[in-house]
Structures are given as C-alpha cells and as structure tokens.
Picture 1 (tube, rainbow, N blue to C red):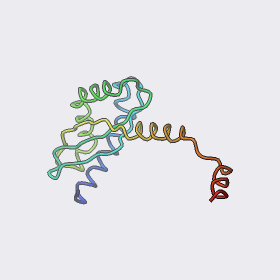
Picture 2: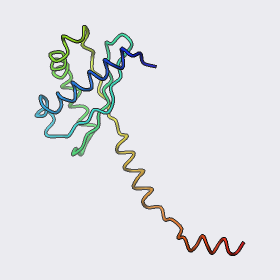
Picture 3: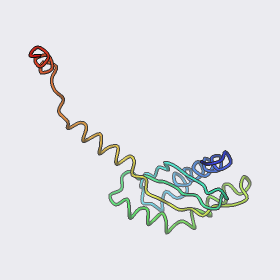
Picture 4: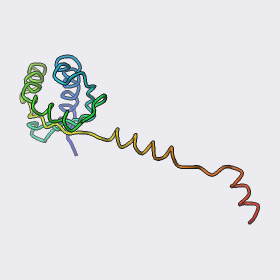
Length: 128
C-alpha cells in the first residue's frame, strides 16, 4: 500500500505529465491523443511507473517505444515544472494501459449476446 506521500507525489507527476503531453510534447507524438491513466511511485520516490493509453493510434506498442525513447526529454520538461515542489525527479518508466481496449472489447461481446424474450420466459413458467 502506498503512503500518503507517494500518492501526493504520484498525483503531482500525473497532473504535470498530462499537461506536458497536451502542450509541450504534442509534436513528438504525431498528434496522438495520450491519456495518463495512472502513476505509481516507488517508496523512495526515485521511480515513477506511468500507465498510458492512446487514441487515434494504430500501433500502440510502437507509440510506447516512441515515448520511451523520448523519456529524457520528458523527464527534463517534468523537472522544470516540479523542481520547486520536489527534491527528486523520478526516472520515468512508461507502460501501456490497455484497460480501455479491454473494456470496449467486453462491451462488444456483451452487446452480441442474445437475450431471451419476455414471452419465452412466460411460456416456460406456464409449463411448470
């Protein structure tokens, strides 16, 4: 379980990285819509795991590789934003969060399930 300090630091990083991806680093990712779904921080605040999802992107794995290769630039931009609020600028580890894709897939599966009609239920109860 994360401490209050870790949670506050994670929220700060998520907020600032979100703004970086919206404004400063938009050109680095070819107009992809980037969503930061979760940030977790190690107990010593030296590592931040950043979970991301992408919209309007065909190959999400390739996009994570692009984000990872730009990690130093992103860390520098983050450092400029939070340098007065934090002593340590964490190393950023980027991960693909595919929960949204999974949820959409499950929703599609559920929509294809045929539901029995109300008449069929009444007929079965009458025969009992």
